[in-house]
Image 1 (cartoon, rainbow, N blue to C red):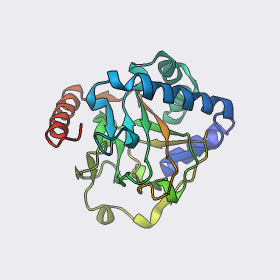
Image 2 (cartoon, rainbow, N blue to C red):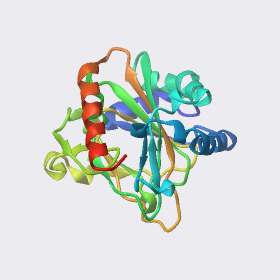
Image 3 (tube, rainbow, N blue to C red):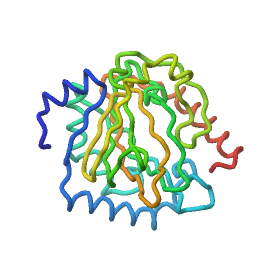
Image 4 (cartoon, rainbow, N blue to C red):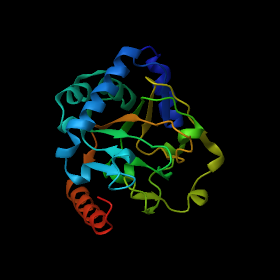
Length: 253
């Protein structure tokens, strides 16, 4: 990691997010991309339906999200649990952390939807709500293809009211976003392949659809909980079960 950790943690605590440029060299992020393509071709057909989301259910060109890469591939598991990202998460959270979920995200051109404003902590169900999500860019990202927009300082607002959305993979969004938040504090973050964004579980963020003609917006996500945070397993499993039933009923998976 080629950034001042002290400076990064201060920015993370103050603003709710930090952007680390060039965390991975070209050969490493290219290898991640190659292994990801192999995973998509060989492993996705074996995955549970609730671990793979497409913008259009029967169109594999619209793949938008894969859950728990680490459960299905030993190389990704090692990167998640033993690579530099876990150490960085511990530094940002100020203590030991637990690896929870490694994800793939994309916003395919022509078919993607906006990501609603939300806080990851609403999904996590933690007390205290101490966790970090990392987002490793695999493509060049800007406003045109749906960059992440962070609401600076929103990690100090506590959990905000959320309600159901129709966005696959982001079933909950902040209710009355403009009422609860100063939307003028939004910051769009451009990224290049190998850049890493990290945000607190309480940080409000969203993204527009991919409006480019032919550019992907691929990324790998890493979720780590603070070791001191207690997870409500019963409530989380009940929520996941209900969500799966709703998606099947709506013919989304």
